[in-house]
Image 1 (cartoon, rainbow, N blue to C red):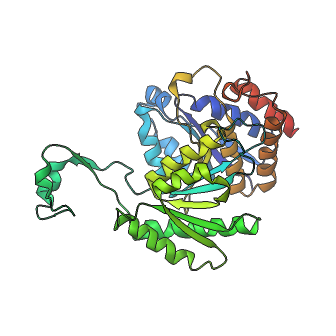
Image 2: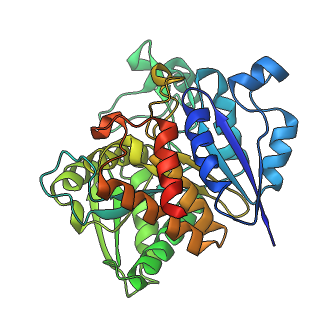
Image 3: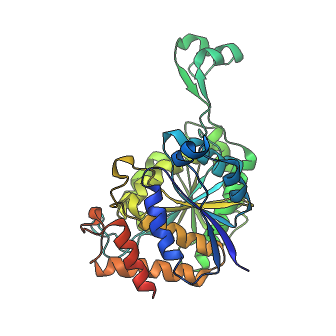
Length: 356
């Protein structure tokens, strides 16, 4: 049966990279229907809201969603895609392709994945005045013996780590690591926390991950504090396989990881839930580049490759990634940050040529 894909460019450079990617997907001979409902700032102008009801319904009914980026006025789009659709597992691959500019001397062979819990932690923001904590928790004393009332004026942010949320992301990461092990990778799961200081929240995340990984004796297991993990991603990236971590840590570490293999222009992602999934580049809306037809669409094209795999179209997914590999290996048609002068459009056209 054919698959239905909802494609939403969103804001900034989002429409450009999504349109470039669709120009490839629409010419691959796939049994897919691509719907393009309004979303983002253009939808605000046409419908008075960044996410009209008709767009929500199409997203809920779609087999997958390909998304570009949002601007400051459209954050409700991400709130819907992430929290309402409950796409709790954020998969962010870090992979080096021959010919890509990397700041590392020897990036060949880097291939690991960060599995980020996508619905808890410090996101979405739960913030307020410290006086609210002083009033609500008048008897709470921290490890330094201070009450909230002693801090005076200021703000707080609450970090939520639940047993349910942690267990399902740990289970997902273990199964993902098993899949990679069977494909010839290291078969290792790395848990990243700050449990030496955040003994309860990070401690819970770490202990539940340990419980889940015991159900997978074929996997190797290790754990690092997030500051140590950050340096290890740069120093020992080839020793990494599957990393599981909480929301903000995963957000930060995956940007760092992207940089060692060429930058955010090559960083794809998938957000997977029990019933829904959306796929997007990590780089965001980059408004200063909007309309210039110069942003590297590789991250979005790779996100589309992940989407095709999710939809069971493995052959097409592999072919799309192989075409990207070939373009970078040849080193002729590259975008500006990779030392070339290709446009967003011409880069996508070159990918399509490799597929024909």
